[in-house]
Length: 150
Image (cartoon, rainbow, N blue to C red; front, side, top):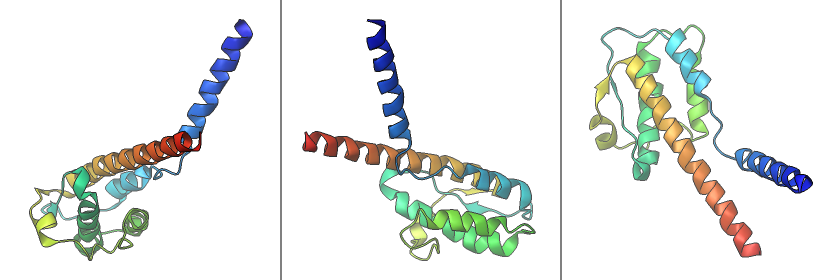
């Protein structure tokens, strides 16, 4: 009986490792942390800061890219090239390769205006929600394909 519990335990542990090692978007929050620490923006700088809405994730990402690739890049001091690291990270998430060129004005300009620090904090939250949604979708697809193959 004890042997069965050990087997069940290891099956549970190993299947959990398999689920967490799926091809979900990697957590690159450290890039946003160093952006917040290393980049200095004028105190009065305000950025359009979208809020997360599942159906608008693509537009939200494009708005974020537009603000970082445009306003932040032009207005802020970045001696350690952290903005480029963030742009590179965002390129992996967006269908337009991180340019923010497909963003609609209504998506960005309709968003609340926040300081640079608040903007970065909001971006972290948005990316976490997008990641969790994509990971859930991928795991659901794996589960569906497993059921189909049985």
